Length: 255
Ligand SMILES: NC(=O)c1ccc[n+]([C@@H]2O[C@H](COP(=O)([O-])OP(=O)(O)OC[C@H]3O[C@@H](n4cnc5c(N)ncnc54)[C@H](OP(=O)(O)O)[C@@H]3O)[C@@H](O)[C@H]2O)c1
Image 1 (tube, rainbow, N blue to C red):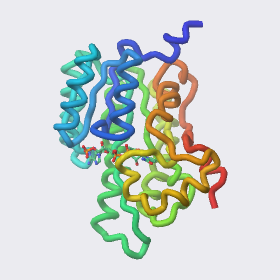
Image 2 (cartoon, rainbow, N blue to C red):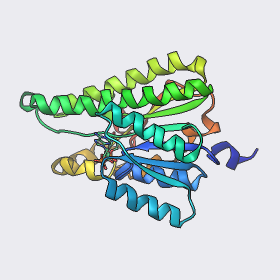
Image 3 (cartoon, helix red, strand yellow):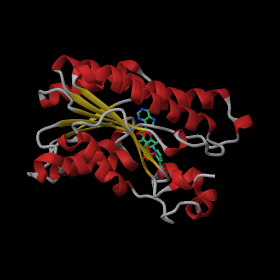
């Protein structure tokens, strides 16, 4: 068995949304190391450009594209630019952009609720639609939605965030159902607490969260490497419609 061929992404074009920081930036580097041509997409162009320059210096084919998932015109433009640059369609979408507001249910403002759903759900859906339409024409593709354990269990002060991620998990299943016949696999990853900028808003609860995590630590972006490679590669060829927690056992001990 050729393990490299099984888990590798040689020659594949992968578009990662939210690649300007945290999980998205890290996974873009992992996929590049696995042989993929990577497209880093987000709004903060300076960060994307810096990451792309570093990847190219290491010899990896990489492209940065501006993307605001709340603007459908920018989604179409990003895919167009990526496909023109590499002269090939997107093989894998890592659908990762997301935002969080951690506030009590009664204090969440309408604008914050709208922003969370526009980014985490509607934005993710529009990006996935754009990818799936293009993949369907070629008869193959992989979509990985980044959900959260907050979409599997109730997390205090995460009503809009948790609801958006629960909906993303449901959307993953429906997409998998509808798109299998077009050669497209769709799965989700549900990270627990992962040390990124997003965790800054949870600082006050850090120790309590670690105490209730069976593995007694927060995750790091690299803890998502294995599952991200599995789902993107040939190794995951018979997997679709699953949402996989990567959380040090958090959902098992949820109270
Ligand atoms: N860290 C955790 O504990 C954790 C746990 C479970 C799930 N997640 C999920 O993992 C994903 C990545 O989060 P992270 O932890 O890596 O946090 P992060 O460092 O804050 O990354 C979030 C990314 O989303 C992008 N983004 C936000 N709004 C966007 C928009 N309108 N259009 C395009 N991109 C947008 C940001 O890029 P720009 O601002 O440059 O556009 C940024 O690159 C999110 O979906 C998050 O919900 C994280």
